[in-house]
Image (cartoon, rainbow, N blue to C red):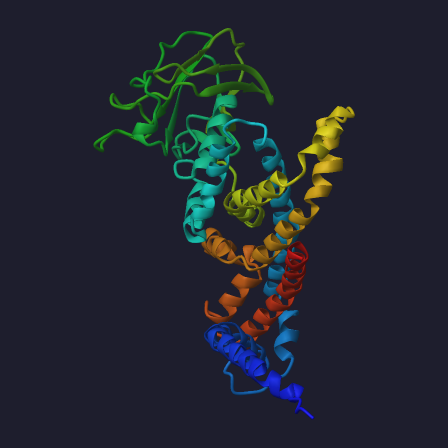
Length: 442
C-alpha cells in the first residue's frame, strides 16, 4: 500500500513562504509605525496624561483642568469663536467652490481662472496673515481696503478741510471743535478776527493767501478766519500778521436769538462780510461741520469685526482648493444626464439644483468635512492677523491652547486639556472622512 503524505507536510513550505512575506512586510512597515508612534501616538498619550496634572506637572489634579477650562471666560470665548469658524467657513467655502466650479465650465479661460484662484494655496498661512494684516490696517495710507473705502466715501461726501483746527484760547472764541465756536455779542460795523491754530502749514489749502481784513462799512459785519501762526516764530497772538494765511472755505454763521440769519464761506484770504443786517446784537458762529474729522475707514481688526475679517483671509486661501476638488467631481458627472434634462426643457437652475448638486453630494461632503477639520486647527492666521489688544476676542481653541501653554500662561496642564478637547472635536470629522474615502474606493 502506497504511503500518502500528510496534508500539513505539503503545506509547510507554503506557510513558511507566507510567514516570510508577512515578516518582510512588517519590516518595511516598522519604520513608518515607529515614526507614527513617535509623532502621533506618543504626543496624544502624553497630552492626555499631562492634562491630569497641575501647571508644574508635579501634582495630580484629575479632571480639575477640564473643569477650569469650561469656567474660564477666555476659553469659552475661544470655543464660541471656533464654533463660528466651523459653521461659517466650511459652508461659505463649499458654496463658493461649487458656484465657481460650475461657472468656470462655461468660460473659455477656465484654466487661467482656476490657476489664479488656486495660487493662494501656494502661499503659507504666515505670508497670508502678513498680507491681510496690512490690508486690514485702519489707516487708509497703509491699509488697501480702507484706502478704497475712504476714497469712495470722500468722493461722495467731501470731508472737512480743517479736522485738526481749534480756536486760539482767550482770543474771543468759546466752544470746541465738536460743538463749534461762537463769539461774544457783536454789532454791525464791528471787525472780528477769528484766530485758529492746530493746522499744519502744509495742510492749509493751496489756494490760501495771506489773511486780510475786509474794509469796514456801516451796517455790515466783517472779519477774517486765519491761521494764527507765523512761520519761523514771532508774530502776535490774536492779531493778523503779514505772513499768516487766511483759511478759505470756512463756514461762518450770523446768529440772532438762537436763529441763523446769514451764512457765508470765507474767501481765499479768510475774509467774510455780512451786509444788510439790522442794527442789533448778533453772535458769529463757526459751526462744528468745519472741523469734522474725515471718514477713517472700517475698523476691520477691532473687537467686533476681527473674527469675520480673519475668516475672509481664510476664504481667500482655501477657495481655490474647494473649487478644484469640486471641479474634478463635476467633470466626472455623466453628461448624458445633463443633456437629457436640457432636452426635456429643464432650465439651468433646475439642472443645477436637481441633478448637479445631488450627483456631487459625495464630493461636497468630503470637501466640507475636510474643511471642518482644517478650520478647527486654524492657528497661524488668527495669531498673526489679530492685534495684541483684541487677540482674546479672536482666539480659537488652537491659539488659546498655545497661549495658555507657551504664550505667557505657562500652564501646560490646562493647555494639554485644551489639546485633548481639540482632538476630541477633530476625531469624529476624521472618522467621517475616512469612511467616505473607503466607500468611494470600494
